Amino acid sequence: MTIDEETGAVAIAAAVGAGAVSAAEVAADAARRIEAAADLVAVVDFDPDEGRVAAEAVDVRLAAGERLPLAGVPILVKDNLWVGGRRVTQGSRLFADFRPPADAIGIARMRAAGAVVMGMANSSEFACKGMTTNKVYGTTRHPQDPRLTPGGSSGGPASAVAAGLVPVALGTDGGGSSRRPPAHVGAVGYKPSYGAVPRGPGFASPFGGLSCISPIANAVADIRLVMSVLAGPDPRDAESLIALFDGRDGPAAPRIAWSPKLGLDVPVDAAVAEGLETAVAALQAAGLTVERRDPVWPEGLTELSLMPIQFAGLAAIHGEAFIRDPFLFDPDVGRQIEQGLAMDGPTVSRAFLLSQDVRRAVARFFLDVDFLLAPTVPCCAWPNDRLGPETIGGVAVAPRAHAVFTPFFNHAQVPAISLPAGRNGDGLPFGLQIAAARGWDFRLIGFAERIEAILDGAGLWKAGRPAAPRGRA
Image (tube, rainbow, N blue to C red; front, side, top):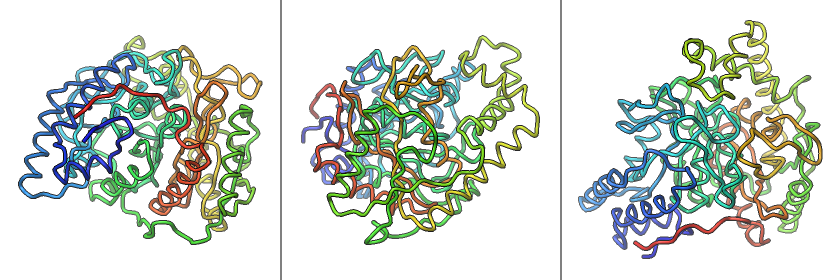
């Protein structure tokens, strides 16, 4: 069997499980790809011997008769999730030599299912920045153009998957970190319902009840496979005790809303706006009924009005270390900590109350709608020497303007997925985001598979995906 950048997790697991190729051979091929793409700075803490040993252990388990749903699938893990025994830094010099004593629950489930951890994938410091750079490993590059950023904070996992280094990577998503980077590089990023995948053991999170372990892949079928392994409660995480609805596709005639700006007064690049209208038209031509409808948000809501939660969380966790030695920190993250240290209690409380209002508003919206379509990003990738694009839609914008369409779904605790849906005139991808009610994870994934097939038939699927180093197993 030839393993190339088009071979997904479903195909690899089936081939390794059937004995057509060994897990060790697949791991060796992934190692060659990772080594050939070192300039991406997507993969960090990489040791091919560790991948080889883990893969050989999977082959032994298969020979003993075990059935493993992720048999031999090589994966990468974002450098803020605990992988027992590996170096995990959060992109911070504070944790430059940290080796966790145990796997996070999600990582343990992936390894038990036969996945092979090949290494860690780069993250911005504490996953708190919309591009991927830090003082430990440096700057992750966009697979199509090294001058550009894949975004953040899961830029390492997204770039690695889009470049074909591995078929699946695990990121985290506290405000869009595993949807926006996939949109920028032409991959699929999935944020589960909050609680669908157990959290911990691991680092303290500055995001409150927002961040989720989030798979990134090149096809929705691979997301489904990984979520079948990751999802389900664990008594160590009380917030994981939620019910996921059964059903692959949900309603036969789904009620679909299309919101070009999510009801927000924000700029969008013309190529993105026009490209997504083309994608929606393709869905309608395929027989889906799509209604133009915006969510109704709480008064005064902006993405920035919720940021005190993150700033205060960073200050609570890392404020003392920042006061002792601010030069250890990424300056952009340091500024967030400074803002958190300066905030009063009512300011932070208002942000948490607003977050709850967002949750209620989205819950009401999904009483009348099954699936919501929206942009993932308002723009394509920008130069990697700045926090964000200087203009969007011809309008001068603040650095966080690229992030406007994803965070509210974190606050609503609902599942959301980003699919590649087109590209701009320079060939750079952008994404279509689909959200559903909390607990509708597998219904959303099933619906996304339908959308994937329609966009593929219309010539919009995986647009702009770069070629990756090839190899044979």
